[in-house]
Length: 603
Image (cartoon, rainbow, N blue to C red; front, side, top):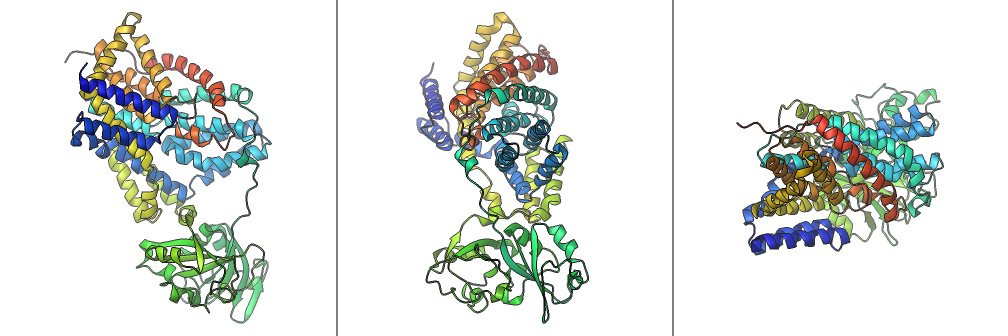
């Protein structure tokens, strides 16, 4: 064994120990691997940094952004509502629909955002069914993993396996090439969860499940229907029903003031020119209403939100009024807020201890009031440094654009459909989908960048570099020969099982992405060593790399539900080990059935 090969083995062992002990974050492990291989000279800079230009990695980044666009548009809320309406309170039906919904979503979205979306849903389901969240959150995570094994874009693992296959001279994996086996695995997994989940999972409350949710943050604002508005003579009820999440409080029409309930008053059924409607709602609903043509802010609240020239850099923030702020005791209009803060528009007010029924421009502000402000991103640093208020970060990420849901779904469906038809490579389609999401204002450019998980990017780049080093030093070939040599006398099925089992064991200890990068070339080399077509061995590595059920550390979704579920490490072992054993048995039947073991035909 050459000195370089010994060094690469030491680096791989060190990375393995760091993954298991969690001594370093996964992105730092990836960076450390890359730097070590560079400093030793095992890889040239071109070879080491090639992973950052990997087609699979760029596609993964694109899928992060497309997933974020669907989340921001609230596209999955319809599925959640459908799930509750169909179940009609039946516990088993609701649980089955929950698992199916998570799995189907994970087949087309990145697993981690799906887990983020459905965590509050699952907690709500647990509360309504009087169940401990610990009975549901691990099954939710497992369902997202199983769903991810049904399509090429379901998880980054699949994309990395496809990339490794192409680098070995094989054809790229198509979108639904392994969907039927994936659905069989998912169906078996669901059956195991239904039979064993309630018995083997703990009945344990967590801190997050016992803390009551805070009150809904509803701001009070007012909108104006100017001369020439396309909504004149349209029904108020129709407009508010389309937006959703809005409660009308008061209508000002000239000298007349009409209080809620407005819809019951014949004077307030239709929109008239010059109407000012006082209303309350969450920031996402307010933003969606103001985005409609024919609706604007009264001039005294500022006109930035209507400014087309600044549209690309406009953001929404919350400002909490500080003690000794010059805003205290003054109105928004009287304080010259927009003039003093570079055109920022305070469009709504939140006051927790009072039901506001005054026009927003006439409300005298108090200490602790929260202003919903629309401003240019360029002045965020100025607002952040101001002593008048505290800038609350992250609101823009929380604003849901439900009006963009059909567009976001259309873009995602288009990407998936065209990829399935092999019209263009998935990387090209993902990039085009990202461009459309941004140009159509489903997702601002800044949030598109923020949606990319850079820790995953760094990890994958580091593992691709390690894979290149293993190939370059001949270690992959040696490992494949050792595996085939040890199991050859038992036949190709035994080697197939060895590849799946090794992948499944490793993925419970280290990142599934790392396992995919390392095991795919080993599987292909093993197949070539036996003289067999590589497909069944390749997919054994693919399914094994995603079979991360026995520990919380191998898969992000498992780790994500760890604290909310109040779990212990042994809880994963109790359910995950039997599930892994059953999945291994199923794999030994399904994989050689779907991809028969055939000897390579000499060209």
